[in-house]
Each structure stands twice: as structure tokens, then as C-alpha cells.
Image (cartoon, rainbow over all chains, first blue to last red; front, side, top):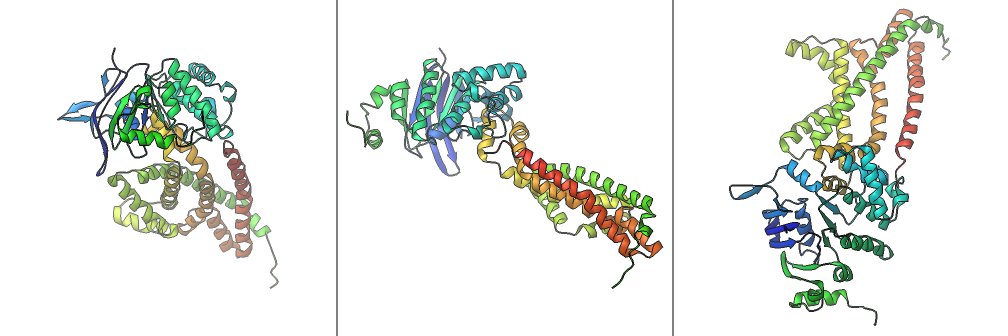
Length: 257
Length: 222
């Protein structure tokens, strides 16, 4: 079976700063992959290279067997229209939700379907309501985002991405901006998606989520994947002292068993 | 200090004033319409990251923002025909001066409004596959317009008053017509008082309307 996402020799520099130094990563269909690492390790940049929010400096990215861009003189070239088309196939959820504040919840979830995919309003509305039901927020459809809690906003953002029928979902630290008591509802929605077989790549600091939900964990350090594998292996018996330190830092104050 | 007010000597010429008010309205509608739509385009050029687009737009804005409209109207009327051979009527000179100035002014309002929208909104549009144009039209501009409404409406009111500058080239707008009446009847005090009153009576409801608009547009705000 072809991988949902295949990344080969990916490099990304911002000016003189090389953030990604040769990444190889496979995400199988239906797999949930969690990217871990301290800030500055390149995990968010890697995620953003998958849907070309950032254009890689070199390397190849394939989505379900389709190589993105065309090779010309040893370099990959990307056409903006191709990238727009690619992004309709990949859903992305952000740390700060980024809902459209001038549109209602329902309009937020319909917008891409109508404007980008060209669906009829009736069809888009039906799909939007179905996705809002999926994240448990049907009754908020007529509200403006300003009236929602952070957790609700994030679930609407998830519904907005799902309404495009994406092949892969990307989550970029989606619980980092939430009050601790609202984190659970968003993680629960993500877990439910993973259990339904959605292919997902998540950047998160929620080690527990990684342990219980992910099929694969990748630990990034200084722009490279330092360790990857099943969460039960990487998170329980890390090979490198760098990963051990990171995990200890995250579980310094655990409740006694 | 005891002036005998004689407004009848002005109102006897109400048809002359009506022509003037019509002239004012025509200038207002054309200059606001062209000025704001031109300003939107110029504002987007100013916002462009490409130097070749950005710099000429900036030059335009600075030239027209930093020269008086009155001087521009006079220049277009007297200098342009000599330099280009194009015949310039008072109407055209007035339209050019006020419109080009309004474009420059509103371009800065549009650019500022577009810039004030958070980068995250661009990302949200991009992430669901929207093109630059789609994101601009559907996501950025609607939010920016709401913020720009107060400066744009006050510019509209400014244009309405600025139309009196066209009297310098004898275009028949309200002030110019009052000048005519005053020169026939030797009643400048009454004639110019009536001009002020006409502007006040027309503008007051317009300004009230903008308050209503601003409140209505603020609905979805947090």
C-alpha cells in the first residue's frame, strides 16, 4: 500500500539558518504520527512543509503516491496553483484556531467547500453540519466564533478542515493555547479521529496523547529525526540520553501512583 | 455692526443654487466612487512585496498626498493643456484633482487596513486551499473594511466639502453659484451663509447614517 505521506531528504533553511537537515519520514494510511521535540527542533516547520505552508529548500514530498512539484535542473519547482490544489487534500489545524471572525461557525465550515471545491451551498451546509456533529458542536452553527470557548473554537477549526474531505490531517500544537481544563475535549476529538482511521500528523507536547493514540512517535532534535518508532518503545525505553532528558523534563512532577 | 439680513435676495435665485448643488453632488459621487475603487487597487499595489510594483505606487501616493488639492486643480486646468495639448474643462480639472487625491489618501487607508489583519488569517485561508486572491477577497478585505469604515466615511464627507475647491476654475458647484449671486446682488454675507447652511443640511443626515453603518458592521466583534 502506498504511504499517505512520504518525505525524502527534506531540507529547509530560513536565510542562513538551516532548520531541517535531511528528514525522511513515512506516514502510512490511517496512521497517527506524533512529532516530539523541544522548541526550535524543527517539528512545526516539518509539519508545515507537508502542506507547503513552507516551501522546502530541497527534498521530495509525496501525498498518496503523487510527487508534489516537478523536477527541473535538479531542483523541485512548485506552481502556486498546484500547491493550492494540494492544500485542499490536506487539512491543517493551528495553535490559535485561526477561525474567520466575520463568519458564523457554519459559514466557517462551509467557506472552503463552496469557494475552493465549488460545492453547492446546500451540499456544503449538509457536510458542514455533519462535521459539526462529529465534533459535537451542531448547536453552535449560527454563533460567531467570538462567542465560543477556546476548546470549542478548536473543534470548529477541526470541523472546518474535515469538511474538505482531506486525505491527511495536520495538527500544529493545537492544545498549547488552551486552558488546561479545555485540553481534554480537543484531545478526545483527535483520538476519535485517529480511531476512525484518519491519517494524522501531530506536533504536540501531550506525551500522554502520543503514548495512547499515536502509532508512531518521531523525536526531532536540531533538524533531524533522532529516534522514531512505536510510542511504547520510544517513550518507555529511549535509546538516546537527549530523549531521556526531554521525557524526564516532561514528567518531573507526576502524581504518585 | 447692524447688518440688514436679506435672504430673499439669495432665495430669489434658488434655481441657480439648485444647479450648484447638483454640480456638487455630481463631483461628490464621481470622485468618491473613482477615488475609493482606485484607492483599493492602489492600496493593494502598495501592499505588494515586489519593489517594481510597490515603489511607483508609493511615489504616486506621496506626490498626491503632499500637494494641495487646490493647487492640483489649478495645475490640471492651466498647465496640463499647455504641456499635453489635451483640452481640460473645469469639470475634468476638478475631477482629476479631487479623485487622484482621494485615491492617494484611501490607498493608505486600504493598505493599513489590510496590514492590520493578522498573518494567521492568511494562513487559515491558504490552509484550506484558497489562492491569494480568494483569501484577499473572502477573508482579509471583509475584516479590513470593517476597520476602515470610519476613515473612509470621513474621507467621503471630506470630498463633499472639497468639491467647493472646483469654484477656483469656475465649475458650477454650490460655492461658485453663490459667488455669481453675490456679484449680481452685492449680498455676499447672505449668499455664503446660505452655502454653509446647504452643506450642513445635506451632510448632517449623511454623517448620522455612517454612525448607523459603523454600528451594524461591528456586529460579529468580540
